[in-house]
Length: 404
Image (cartoon, rainbow, N blue to C red):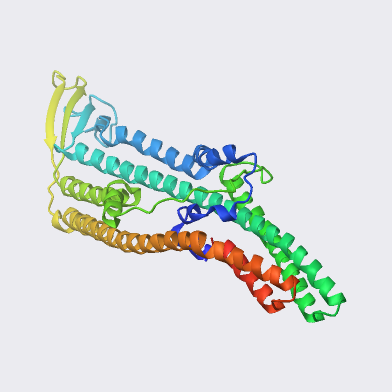
């Protein structure tokens, strides 16, 4: 029951642990209470994956400056109009050295469209970074609470081993007196060995979770992590609608899909703009050398623009493709919201049932199970209860305590 609750409700479910499970709080409980948040902060500060995303974000923002930059002017030199039989200036009236300075001016709005695409990609990456932080927080908190649960289960098991030691002493005496069979004594031994084997499994789980937490926090695997032996119950939210509204506002994964849709829309506008003709202007100066005429230098001015005959098949097609991708992203976002709505509703129902069940076990079933075991044990010692009743009462109490 605990495993199912942890898997379904993550960090919330472990907070349903109740006092019967927590016989003695360790001296480090005050440290453990804030330990999970310290681990979260360290994981966020030390995570290489977050560092990589942050570096990529810095690179994108740096690219914003170049996206809106003017094109470089072009300077050219031309040795022109030379006769093929005399490659020296002055042999022909039109020969000379042409100096030309040209500059291409982007069509209005093109540079803004390019900057918008880069800004959109930066917003996508920023949302990806935020979502990764959410996932990292969740992973650390869930592992921490699973570690606390494992240690609580180990504590419960140790208590029952002490209880079984008392039972074994009584059954052994009764067996030696011939008042019970050897099979009863063996059944208790099997249960005792099974619980000791469970301690080994709990130790394995503890080491695995410690390794996960320390690796996430970039610490050595042997670093100790203190956890409390008592976790306060956490009340379930009253409304799935309020949770969904909060998710729609704050969930980075949804912001990323919205930003992706806007980026595709910006790419569509850029594609449309890129088809508009840019204007290239130039200034030319021809150095002429004396020959049959006076050799006066020439000056030239000019403008050129491309003719967008293939606009529809090239830029129009790119625009349509980006608009289609934008619609796809918005559809993915609606699908993600529907998925979150369904998962929130199901998790909230399980949460409420888990809280109700934990309360019922703690307030009703556990006290009865304890009294039942005490009464059965007392009756067994005076031969007024069977071994089967004692064995069943012990298993029932163990199951209740582990479930809580």
